[in-house]
Length: 325
Image 1 (cartoon, rainbow, N blue to C red):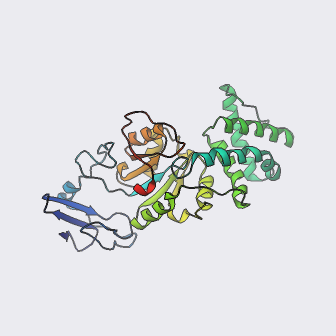
Image 2 (cartoon, rainbow, N blue to C red):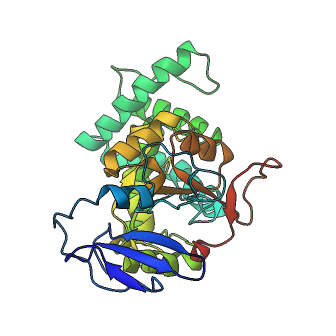
Image 3 (cartoon, rainbow, N blue to C red):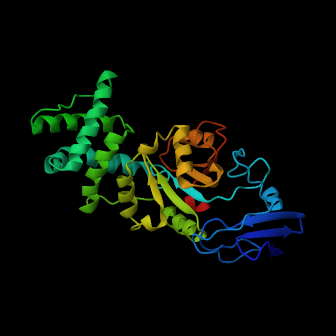
């Protein structure tokens, strides 16, 4: 049976007489309850002030800050699953085949960087791209990074373009996850998407999963090493059409390296949830999973054809399809 704790519908006590347990279900995202067993109903409008739960409810909920999350997705030390509010998705190897990135996007940027620079050289956007690359290359030269060629600050147009092309091609070959490269790549890909030379590919289960999560009231975000522009282009021009209506926002390397704990702490602070365990991060990269878990996020590793191998006994829940989540 289910009884409302107060006149407002957000908080419910659910009693299961079979196991003599009482659970509290709190409505957090704005939308509708979907098949919650004993409870169904409509949530208050977005922006409503929810009543504070009693001390008893807090004990039932077990919602303590920094409650450790086990490898079993979303289970806290007291055995009560935290209320998942947000899902953050990686792209390459999670929503999109790695082969699309390596065989389509990277070659397009590599082959068209010179043409793009020639056509847009005098624009403020391209000059900003060149300046960002120039600053990166200064660091690379000091560190003796292979392929780093100084970009002249004062030189003719062709000399500057040639040096930028050389650096970009070397960076792409090394698959470097740096903001200066990703920003320029996004601008090059924009031309390809807008001219219909490129169509993004997502796995067949992605649209269904996004639609389901949207209906459940979950907020879905993307965190990728590609620029936010590139992310919007990919999800706005897929083989299943424009999927951006299901997404709430995008994070890129400007928030931090994907293999660093601090980046996921920044995402948690940005999303405004009470506890990092309310955020599920889905990725195919073990090092990213480690960093996200260290920040307190719930983590599931994506298993797709062509993804890299995982260590034995890695301790993470895995999935072969987003529709399983």
